[in-house]
Amino acid sequence: MGFVLLSDRRLDPALDPTPPALKVLYTYWLEKRRGQSMPSRRDIDTAEILANLGRVHLLEVEGPTTFRYRLYGSHVTNPDGTDMTGLTTRDYRDVDFGSLVTRHHAECVRERSPVCYEIRAKIGGDPYDYARLALPLSEDGERVDMILVGSVGGRIRSRARRGAGGSQGA
Image 1: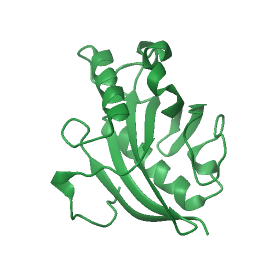
Image 2 (image 1 turned 45 degrees about the horizontal axis):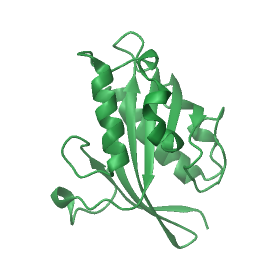
Image 3 (image 1 turned 120 degrees about the vertical axis):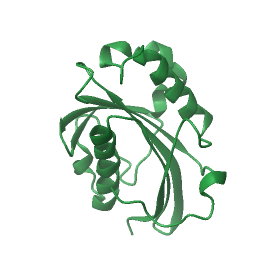
Image 4 (image 1 turned 180 degrees about the horizontal axis):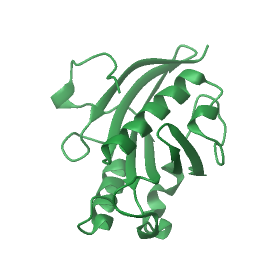
């Protein structure tokens, strides 16, 4: 059995409760903007995010729905159990999981702003709950050309959205 999505609730990382590691990454991204709409890849120093490094991905935006992993965090799991470095979000063996990841990243690119989700799913009948934060990066301040992504296991209990069910569409 593969990945079965139960819900993917969108959260506002500035307002909703998020895992501490993602809150730290979001705050770092805000600081690196320096008054711009989003920071560039050059603004991100991996030495400054060492505590999060194993939970971080860096993806190159090759098209509106094509995202290639340039860095794939060593502490992050996926249904395939595959290191995705050099591959795209469409290369996951589990097509449903890859489609979900692609949709979330496409939202980040389209909106040119952070996208955070609480994901509840099952893999082979076992719970697979985690949170993902996608942060846009831009060399010219307009077009998103890279995405910095943090991922943390565990369920988020959002008081503001408790009781809301189902999957949010793109």
